[in-house]
Length: 432
Image (cartoon, rainbow, N blue to C red; front, side, top):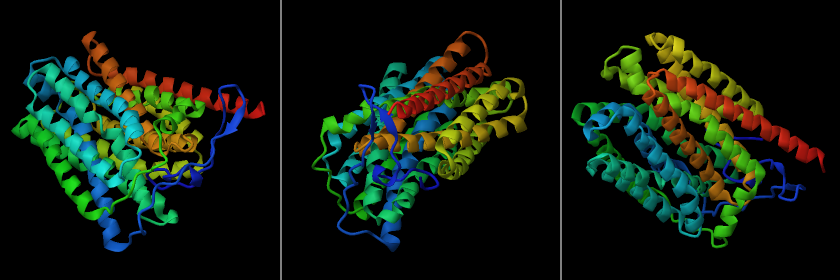
Protein backbone atom coordinates (compact mmCIF):
# COMPACT_ATOMS: atom_id res chain seq x y z
CA UNK A 1 0.00 0.00 0.00
CA UNK A 2 1.27 3.45 -0.92
CA UNK A 3 0.31 6.62 0.81
CA UNK A 4 1.49 10.17 1.02
CA UNK A 5 3.42 11.38 3.98
CA UNK A 6 0.45 12.98 5.65
CA UNK A 7 -2.75 11.40 4.35
CA UNK A 8 -3.96 8.33 2.48
CA UNK A 9 -4.64 8.29 -1.24
CA UNK A 10 -7.99 9.76 -2.14
CA UNK A 11 -9.60 6.74 -3.72
CA UNK A 12 -9.99 3.14 -2.67
CA UNK A 13 -9.31 2.09 -6.23
CA UNK A 14 -5.64 2.87 -5.47
CA UNK A 15 -5.65 1.00 -2.16
CA UNK A 16 -5.69 -2.70 -1.25
CA UNK A 17 -9.16 -3.44 0.07
CA UNK A 18 -9.92 -5.16 3.32
CA UNK A 19 -11.77 -8.42 3.07
CA UNK A 20 -14.34 -8.29 5.81
CA UNK A 21 -17.21 -10.24 7.23
CA UNK A 22 -20.64 -9.39 5.85
CA UNK A 23 -23.77 -9.32 7.95
CA UNK A 24 -24.41 -12.99 7.29
CA UNK A 25 -20.90 -13.99 8.31
CA UNK A 26 -19.53 -14.48 4.79
CA UNK A 27 -16.43 -12.69 3.62
CA UNK A 28 -16.79 -10.09 0.92
CA UNK A 29 -14.37 -7.81 -0.85
CA UNK A 30 -14.87 -4.14 -0.20
CA UNK A 31 -14.78 -3.51 -3.95
CA UNK A 32 -13.44 -0.56 -5.86
CA UNK A 33 -14.43 2.96 -5.05
CA UNK A 34 -15.89 5.43 -7.46
CA UNK A 35 -13.23 7.84 -8.66
CA UNK A 36 -13.39 11.44 -7.60
CA UNK A 37 -15.00 13.68 -10.17
CA UNK A 38 -12.33 15.09 -12.43
CA UNK A 39 -11.87 18.69 -13.40
CA UNK A 40 -11.75 19.54 -17.11
CA UNK A 41 -7.96 19.07 -17.12
CA UNK A 42 -5.24 18.62 -14.49
CA UNK A 43 -3.72 21.85 -13.23
CA UNK A 44 -0.01 22.44 -13.03
CA UNK A 45 2.50 24.99 -11.84
CA UNK A 46 1.46 28.09 -9.95
CA UNK A 47 -2.30 27.60 -10.47
CA UNK A 48 -2.18 24.17 -8.86
CA UNK A 49 -0.07 25.42 -5.96
CA UNK A 50 -2.48 28.30 -5.33
CA UNK A 51 -5.48 25.96 -5.43
CA UNK A 52 -3.90 23.61 -2.90
CA UNK A 53 -2.93 26.52 -0.65
CA UNK A 54 -6.49 27.86 -0.87
CA UNK A 55 -7.93 24.51 0.22
CA UNK A 56 -5.26 24.14 2.93
CA UNK A 57 -6.30 27.52 4.35
CA UNK A 58 -9.60 25.92 5.29
CA UNK A 59 -7.72 23.27 7.24
CA UNK A 60 -5.67 26.02 8.89
CA UNK A 61 -8.87 27.76 10.02
CA UNK A 62 -10.35 24.49 11.28
CA UNK A 63 -7.21 23.58 13.21
CA UNK A 64 -7.15 27.03 14.77
CA UNK A 65 -10.79 27.13 15.89
CA UNK A 66 -10.75 23.55 17.17
CA UNK A 67 -7.66 23.77 19.35
CA UNK A 68 -7.55 27.41 20.46
CA UNK A 69 -10.36 26.69 22.91
CA UNK A 70 -7.99 24.49 24.93
CA UNK A 71 -5.43 27.27 25.25
CA UNK A 72 -8.05 29.87 26.22
CA UNK A 73 -10.17 27.66 28.46
CA UNK A 74 -9.39 29.53 31.73
CA UNK A 75 -10.03 32.90 30.01
CA UNK A 76 -13.33 31.70 28.53
CA UNK A 77 -14.35 30.28 31.92
CA UNK A 78 -13.80 33.66 33.58
CA UNK A 79 -15.57 35.44 30.73
CA UNK A 80 -18.75 33.37 31.03
CA UNK A 81 -18.47 33.00 34.82
CA UNK A 82 -18.21 29.20 34.93
CA UNK A 83 -15.70 26.70 36.32
CA UNK A 84 -13.00 25.35 34.05
CA UNK A 85 -14.40 21.77 34.05
CA UNK A 86 -17.89 23.04 33.13
CA UNK A 87 -16.49 25.32 30.45
CA UNK A 88 -14.62 22.30 29.07
CA UNK A 89 -18.01 21.06 27.85
CA UNK A 90 -17.81 23.57 25.00
CA UNK A 91 -14.99 21.40 23.62
CA UNK A 92 -17.39 18.47 23.76
CA UNK A 93 -20.06 20.56 22.03
CA UNK A 94 -17.77 21.36 19.08
CA UNK A 95 -16.88 17.69 18.81
CA UNK A 96 -20.56 16.71 18.74
CA UNK A 97 -21.08 19.20 15.93
CA UNK A 98 -18.40 17.45 13.89
CA UNK A 99 -19.91 14.04 14.62
CA UNK A 100 -23.39 15.13 13.53
CA UNK A 101 -22.31 17.29 10.60
CA UNK A 102 -19.85 14.98 8.83
CA UNK A 103 -22.18 12.13 7.81
CA UNK A 104 -25.25 14.35 7.44
CA UNK A 105 -23.69 17.02 5.23
CA UNK A 106 -21.70 14.49 3.20
CA UNK A 107 -24.75 12.33 2.52
CA UNK A 108 -26.90 15.31 1.53
CA UNK A 109 -24.21 17.23 -0.36
CA UNK A 110 -22.54 14.52 -2.44
CA UNK A 111 -24.32 15.70 -5.61
CA UNK A 112 -23.43 19.39 -5.18
CA UNK A 113 -20.59 21.12 -7.08
CA UNK A 114 -17.44 20.56 -5.06
CA UNK A 115 -15.97 24.06 -5.11
CA UNK A 116 -19.22 25.73 -4.10
CA UNK A 117 -19.81 23.15 -1.36
CA UNK A 118 -16.31 23.78 0.04
CA UNK A 119 -16.92 27.55 0.06
CA UNK A 120 -20.26 27.11 1.81
CA UNK A 121 -18.74 24.84 4.43
CA UNK A 122 -15.82 27.11 5.25
CA UNK A 123 -18.11 30.13 5.53
CA UNK A 124 -20.39 28.13 7.82
CA UNK A 125 -17.33 27.49 10.00
CA UNK A 126 -16.70 31.23 10.07
CA UNK A 127 -20.29 31.95 11.08
CA UNK A 128 -20.00 29.46 13.93
CA UNK A 129 -16.87 31.22 15.15
CA UNK A 130 -18.61 34.60 14.87
CA UNK A 131 -21.54 33.27 16.91
CA UNK A 132 -19.03 32.13 19.54
CA UNK A 133 -17.48 35.59 19.70
CA UNK A 134 -20.90 37.23 20.05
CA UNK A 135 -22.37 34.75 22.52
CA UNK A 136 -22.73 35.69 26.18
CA UNK A 137 -23.16 33.03 28.83
CA UNK A 138 -22.48 29.33 29.02
CA UNK A 139 -25.40 27.93 27.00
CA UNK A 140 -25.07 30.35 24.05
CA UNK A 141 -21.33 29.64 23.79
CA UNK A 142 -22.04 25.91 24.02
CA UNK A 143 -24.54 26.13 21.13
CA UNK A 144 -22.23 28.33 19.05
CA UNK A 145 -19.40 25.81 19.33
CA UNK A 146 -21.77 23.05 18.19
CA UNK A 147 -22.69 25.09 15.09
CA UNK A 148 -19.01 25.79 14.38
CA UNK A 149 -18.25 22.06 14.44
CA UNK A 150 -20.90 21.01 11.91
CA UNK A 151 -18.87 21.68 8.70
CA UNK A 152 -15.52 20.39 10.02
CA UNK A 153 -15.47 16.78 8.78
CA UNK A 154 -17.44 17.45 5.60
CA UNK A 155 -14.97 20.18 4.58
CA UNK A 156 -12.03 17.80 4.73
CA UNK A 157 -13.99 15.23 2.75
CA UNK A 158 -14.87 17.57 -0.11
CA UNK A 159 -11.49 19.35 -0.09
CA UNK A 160 -9.74 16.00 -0.47
CA UNK A 161 -11.89 15.09 -3.48
CA UNK A 162 -11.30 18.49 -5.08
CA UNK A 163 -7.54 18.14 -4.67
CA UNK A 164 -7.66 14.67 -6.24
CA UNK A 165 -9.53 16.03 -9.26
CA UNK A 166 -6.95 18.74 -9.97
CA UNK A 167 -3.99 16.46 -10.70
CA UNK A 168 -3.04 13.27 -12.53
CA UNK A 169 -3.80 10.00 -10.71
CA UNK A 170 -0.14 9.49 -9.81
CA UNK A 171 -0.07 12.89 -8.04
CA UNK A 172 -3.27 12.58 -6.02
CA UNK A 173 -1.61 11.54 -2.77
CA UNK A 174 0.63 14.61 -2.77
CA UNK A 175 -2.32 16.88 -3.58
CA UNK A 176 -4.32 15.54 -0.64
CA UNK A 177 -1.24 15.82 1.55
CA UNK A 178 -0.98 19.51 0.70
CA UNK A 179 -4.56 20.09 1.81
CA UNK A 180 -4.17 18.24 5.10
CA UNK A 181 -0.97 20.08 5.98
CA UNK A 182 -3.18 23.10 6.71
CA UNK A 183 -4.58 21.39 9.79
CA UNK A 184 -1.13 20.67 11.23
CA UNK A 185 0.14 24.16 10.43
CA UNK A 186 -2.93 25.50 12.21
CA UNK A 187 -1.77 23.80 15.40
CA UNK A 188 1.77 25.18 14.95
CA UNK A 189 1.00 28.77 13.96
CA UNK A 190 -2.72 29.51 14.20
CA UNK A 191 -3.33 28.17 17.69
CA UNK A 192 -0.40 29.85 19.48
CA UNK A 193 -1.06 33.14 17.65
CA UNK A 194 -4.79 33.16 18.36
CA UNK A 195 -4.18 32.05 21.96
CA UNK A 196 -1.80 34.97 22.46
CA UNK A 197 -4.33 37.29 20.83
CA UNK A 198 -7.11 35.97 23.06
CA UNK A 199 -5.03 36.42 26.20
CA UNK A 200 -3.95 39.96 25.31
CA UNK A 201 -7.11 41.39 23.69
CA UNK A 202 -9.81 39.10 25.08
CA UNK A 203 -10.81 35.53 24.32
CA UNK A 204 -13.49 36.58 21.80
CA UNK A 205 -10.84 38.09 19.51
CA UNK A 206 -9.48 34.59 18.78
CA UNK A 207 -12.78 33.60 17.16
CA UNK A 208 -12.99 36.84 15.15
CA UNK A 209 -9.55 35.88 13.87
CA UNK A 210 -10.96 32.55 12.69
CA UNK A 211 -13.80 34.34 10.89
CA UNK A 212 -11.22 36.41 9.00
CA UNK A 213 -9.38 33.21 8.02
CA UNK A 214 -12.54 31.64 6.63
CA UNK A 215 -13.36 34.71 4.53
CA UNK A 216 -9.84 34.68 3.07
CA UNK A 217 -10.20 30.96 2.37
CA UNK A 218 -13.54 31.39 0.59
CA UNK A 219 -12.14 34.13 -1.68
CA UNK A 220 -9.01 32.10 -2.50
CA UNK A 221 -11.03 28.95 -3.28
CA UNK A 222 -13.35 30.87 -5.62
CA UNK A 223 -10.39 32.48 -7.39
CA UNK A 224 -7.98 29.55 -7.58
CA UNK A 225 -10.05 26.34 -7.66
CA UNK A 226 -11.84 25.47 -10.92
CA UNK A 227 -15.46 24.41 -10.90
CA UNK A 228 -15.74 20.67 -10.23
CA UNK A 229 -19.15 19.01 -10.65
CA UNK A 230 -20.68 16.87 -7.96
CA UNK A 231 -21.17 13.15 -8.32
CA UNK A 232 -24.52 12.79 -10.10
CA UNK A 233 -24.67 9.09 -9.25
CA UNK A 234 -24.34 9.68 -5.51
CA UNK A 235 -27.22 8.77 -3.21
CA UNK A 236 -27.69 9.12 0.52
CA UNK A 237 -28.00 5.33 0.76
CA UNK A 238 -24.72 4.74 -1.08
CA UNK A 239 -22.82 7.24 1.02
CA UNK A 240 -24.14 5.79 4.27
CA UNK A 241 -23.48 2.21 3.15
CA UNK A 242 -19.98 2.43 4.59
CA UNK A 243 -21.50 2.37 8.06
CA UNK A 244 -22.56 -1.25 7.49
CA UNK A 245 -19.00 -2.50 7.04
CA UNK A 246 -17.52 -4.15 10.17
CA UNK A 247 -13.99 -2.96 9.41
CA UNK A 248 -15.24 0.64 9.18
CA UNK A 249 -17.11 0.35 12.48
CA UNK A 250 -14.08 -1.14 14.23
CA UNK A 251 -11.84 1.68 12.95
CA UNK A 252 -14.36 4.31 14.04
CA UNK A 253 -14.69 2.71 17.50
CA UNK A 254 -10.91 2.56 17.86
CA UNK A 255 -10.60 6.26 17.13
CA UNK A 256 -13.56 7.21 19.32
CA UNK A 257 -12.13 5.54 22.41
CA UNK A 258 -8.38 5.44 21.89
CA UNK A 259 -7.89 8.96 20.58
CA UNK A 260 -9.82 10.23 23.59
CA UNK A 261 -6.65 9.63 25.57
CA UNK A 262 -4.92 12.48 23.73
CA UNK A 263 -7.73 14.92 24.45
CA UNK A 264 -8.23 13.93 28.08
CA UNK A 265 -4.82 15.48 28.69
CA UNK A 266 -4.69 18.16 25.99
CA UNK A 267 -8.12 19.66 26.76
CA UNK A 268 -6.79 20.81 30.14
CA UNK A 269 -3.22 21.61 29.09
CA UNK A 270 -3.53 25.31 30.06
CA UNK A 271 -4.42 24.74 33.76
CA UNK A 272 -2.05 21.76 33.83
CA UNK A 273 0.84 24.05 32.87
CA UNK A 274 -0.13 26.92 35.17
CA UNK A 275 -1.28 24.96 38.25
CA UNK A 276 0.90 21.85 38.17
CA UNK A 277 4.03 22.92 36.30
CA UNK A 278 3.93 26.32 37.98
CA UNK A 279 4.37 28.58 34.95
CA UNK A 280 2.54 31.80 34.08
CA UNK A 281 -0.28 31.64 31.53
CA UNK A 282 1.99 33.45 29.07
CA UNK A 283 3.93 30.17 28.77
CA UNK A 284 0.90 28.25 27.49
CA UNK A 285 1.34 29.25 23.81
CA UNK A 286 4.85 27.77 23.87
CA UNK A 287 3.44 24.41 24.92
CA UNK A 288 0.78 24.65 22.23
CA UNK A 289 3.58 25.32 19.75
CA UNK A 290 5.39 22.19 20.96
CA UNK A 291 2.19 20.20 20.37
CA UNK A 292 1.86 21.69 16.88
CA UNK A 293 5.45 20.94 15.90
CA UNK A 294 4.97 17.38 17.10
CA UNK A 295 1.79 17.17 15.02
CA UNK A 296 3.56 18.32 11.84
CA UNK A 297 6.45 15.90 12.34
CA UNK A 298 3.96 13.17 13.20
CA UNK A 299 2.22 13.73 9.87
CA UNK A 300 5.47 12.95 8.05
CA UNK A 301 6.23 9.97 10.30
CA UNK A 302 2.69 8.62 9.87
CA UNK A 303 3.17 8.30 6.11
CA UNK A 304 6.40 6.36 6.55
CA UNK A 305 4.84 4.06 9.13
CA UNK A 306 1.70 3.50 7.05
CA UNK A 307 3.85 2.42 4.09
CA UNK A 308 5.55 -0.04 6.43
CA UNK A 309 2.55 -1.52 8.27
CA UNK A 310 -0.68 0.22 9.30
CA UNK A 311 -1.68 -2.33 11.93
CA UNK A 312 1.67 -2.35 13.71
CA UNK A 313 1.85 1.44 13.53
CA UNK A 314 -1.51 1.84 15.27
CA UNK A 315 -0.64 -0.73 17.92
CA UNK A 316 2.77 0.83 18.57
CA UNK A 317 1.37 4.37 18.76
CA UNK A 318 -1.24 3.29 21.30
CA UNK A 319 1.33 1.51 23.46
CA UNK A 320 3.57 4.59 23.53
CA UNK A 321 0.53 6.81 24.21
CA UNK A 322 -0.36 4.79 27.31
CA UNK A 323 3.16 5.18 28.67
CA UNK A 324 3.58 8.88 27.85
CA UNK A 325 0.18 9.91 29.23
CA UNK A 326 0.78 7.97 32.45
CA UNK A 327 4.12 9.78 32.87
CA UNK A 328 2.31 13.12 33.26
CA UNK A 329 1.36 12.17 36.82
CA UNK A 330 4.92 11.90 38.20
CA UNK A 331 6.55 14.42 35.83
CA UNK A 332 4.09 17.33 35.63
CA UNK A 333 6.28 19.45 37.91
CA UNK A 334 9.17 19.45 35.42
CA UNK A 335 9.07 22.07 32.65
CA UNK A 336 11.46 20.13 30.41
CA UNK A 337 9.55 16.89 30.86
CA UNK A 338 6.21 18.55 30.11
CA UNK A 339 7.50 20.19 26.92
CA UNK A 340 8.72 16.78 25.77
CA UNK A 341 5.46 15.07 26.73
CA UNK A 342 3.27 17.64 24.97
CA UNK A 343 5.48 17.36 21.86
CA UNK A 344 5.25 13.55 21.83
CA UNK A 345 1.48 13.65 22.40
CA UNK A 346 1.13 15.89 19.33
CA UNK A 347 3.30 13.52 17.30
CA UNK A 348 1.36 10.45 18.41
CA UNK A 349 -1.93 12.17 17.63
CA UNK A 350 -0.95 12.60 13.98
CA UNK A 351 0.39 9.06 13.69
CA UNK A 352 -2.83 7.61 15.06
CA UNK A 353 -5.18 9.90 13.14
CA UNK A 354 -3.55 9.32 9.75
CA UNK A 355 -3.08 5.58 10.10
CA UNK A 356 -6.69 5.19 11.21
CA UNK A 357 -7.65 7.32 8.21
CA UNK A 358 -5.79 4.89 5.95
CA UNK A 359 -7.67 2.05 7.59
CA UNK A 360 -11.02 3.75 6.94
CA UNK A 361 -10.19 4.60 3.33
CA UNK A 362 -9.32 0.96 2.72
CA UNK A 363 -12.63 -0.20 4.11
CA UNK A 364 -15.28 2.33 3.02
CA UNK A 365 -15.99 0.92 -0.45
CA UNK A 366 -17.40 3.44 -2.92
CA UNK A 367 -18.67 5.87 -0.25
CA UNK A 368 -15.64 8.04 -0.93
CA UNK A 369 -16.54 11.33 0.68
CA UNK A 370 -18.05 9.71 3.76
CA UNK A 371 -14.95 7.57 4.18
CA UNK A 372 -12.83 10.73 4.13
CA UNK A 373 -15.08 12.43 6.69
CA UNK A 374 -15.78 9.56 9.13
CA UNK A 375 -12.35 9.71 10.71
CA UNK A 376 -12.98 13.30 11.77
CA UNK A 377 -16.28 12.27 13.34
CA UNK A 378 -14.58 9.49 15.28
CA UNK A 379 -11.72 11.68 16.47
CA UNK A 380 -14.07 14.43 17.57
CA UNK A 381 -16.15 11.96 19.56
CA UNK A 382 -12.81 11.16 21.16
CA UNK A 383 -12.25 14.88 21.66
CA UNK A 384 -15.54 15.25 23.50
CA UNK A 385 -15.15 12.01 25.47
CA UNK A 386 -11.67 12.92 26.63
CA UNK A 387 -12.68 16.44 27.67
CA UNK A 388 -15.78 15.15 29.47
CA UNK A 389 -14.03 12.40 31.43
CA UNK A 390 -11.12 14.69 32.22
CA UNK A 391 -13.55 17.25 33.61
CA UNK A 392 -15.19 14.60 35.80
CA UNK A 393 -11.95 13.67 37.58
CA UNK A 394 -11.08 17.34 38.05
CA UNK A 395 -14.52 17.99 39.54
CA UNK A 396 -13.95 15.02 41.84
CA UNK A 397 -10.95 16.86 43.31
CA UNK A 398 -8.11 14.84 41.80
CA UNK A 399 -6.30 17.79 40.24
CA UNK A 400 -5.13 18.57 36.71
CA UNK A 401 -2.75 15.61 36.48
CA UNK A 402 -5.58 13.11 36.77
CA UNK A 403 -7.04 13.59 33.26
CA UNK A 404 -3.81 12.26 31.78
CA UNK A 405 -4.21 9.04 33.76
CA UNK A 406 -7.76 8.79 32.38
CA UNK A 407 -6.21 9.36 28.95
CA UNK A 408 -3.83 6.44 29.44
CA UNK A 409 -6.85 4.25 30.19
CA UNK A 410 -8.67 5.43 27.06
CA UNK A 411 -5.60 4.77 24.91
CA UNK A 412 -5.43 1.26 26.37
CA UNK A 413 -9.12 0.81 25.51
CA UNK A 414 -8.52 1.87 21.91
CA UNK A 415 -5.64 -0.57 21.69
CA UNK A 416 -7.87 -3.44 22.87
CA UNK A 417 -10.60 -2.57 20.34
CA UNK A 418 -8.11 -2.39 17.49
CA UNK A 419 -6.48 -5.69 18.43
CA UNK A 420 -9.91 -7.33 18.60
CA UNK A 421 -10.68 -6.00 15.11
CA UNK A 422 -7.54 -7.71 13.81
CA UNK A 423 -8.59 -10.98 15.43
CA UNK A 424 -12.11 -10.68 13.97
CA UNK A 425 -10.71 -9.93 10.53
CA UNK A 426 -8.43 -12.97 10.58
CA UNK A 427 -11.27 -15.21 11.76
CA UNK A 428 -13.50 -13.96 8.93
CA UNK A 429 -10.73 -14.55 6.38
CA UNK A 430 -9.96 -18.08 7.54
CA UNK A 431 -13.69 -18.92 7.46
CA UNK A 432 -13.76 -18.60 3.64
